Image (tube, rainbow over all chains, first blue to last red; front, side):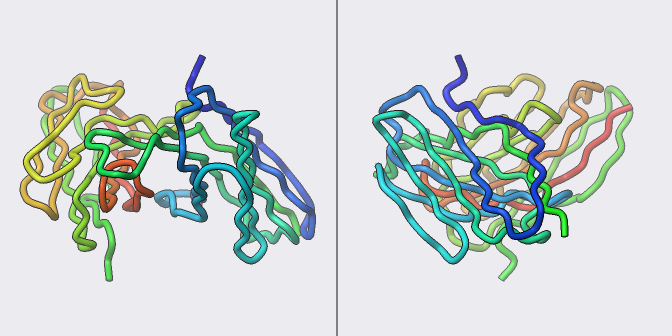
Length: 115
Length: 112
């Protein structure tokens, strides 16, 4: 079993829809959770990151972590065609100078928002 | 403010040729990483450098070598390129290991 599982999609929605993107993980020691957005022919860019459980909101984006279920989500409200991209989740054990501890990425979900 | 800069952006090689991919960051980050991204495989870590002077293997290190030249620069070398190394290569950096990483825009490498 891979440490991080993410449905690759593709996911197609009309403009204005609410989008839910999800990842599950197996390592209960993960503490930090991130979402990246990757446009075609570009590198991933950090969207949001959260620590432990709970919600974090930034404009139209909300990141949610449920550590008891080992499940994280990214919600996009009022989706726009410019949101069309691949979204990758990532997680890590700890930030406190864990030499040699890298991020673990999901494979990404491709989202298409049509106008 | 450039962030993470990768050169070249595109390259075509013949099997058996060697090549070095360059990466530089201007954010004074301690940790740097090399990934490859293939369709259906996601991002796979090749090598990383947690701090200047150290390098460690990632998930798929075979066929590659790295050099952390200084705090800013981290290069990836293919000594004898193989068609299986056709991929998009991304360099990333972070303040310390396990923190959010900042990525370059990639090098698209084709090996014939």
